[in-house]
Length: 83
Image (cartoon, rainbow, N blue to C red; front, side, top):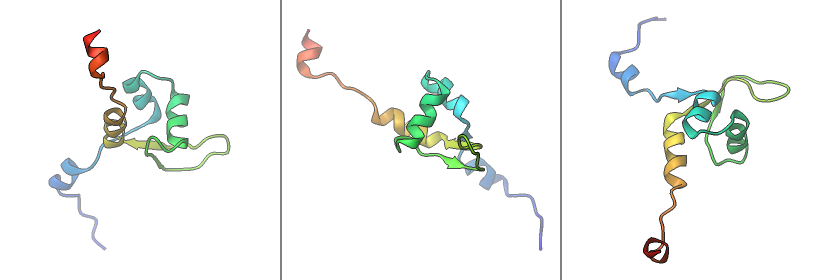
């Protein structure tokens, strides 16, 4: 069994994961709102461990946060833009 360090290319291309507090800071919401977004399925997350009260070790891919933000854009209608 070999224990070689990962290639620099693999590390550079690895997705970046954020914890719930980092996501809350980016979205300017509370941490509980982030957990609600995860439980409702509107934000994708990975669980690294389990907890009795709430999941512990939740990590959210940065790409999932970007997709959530892109999906929540509101574009004004022509009537709203004219007003």
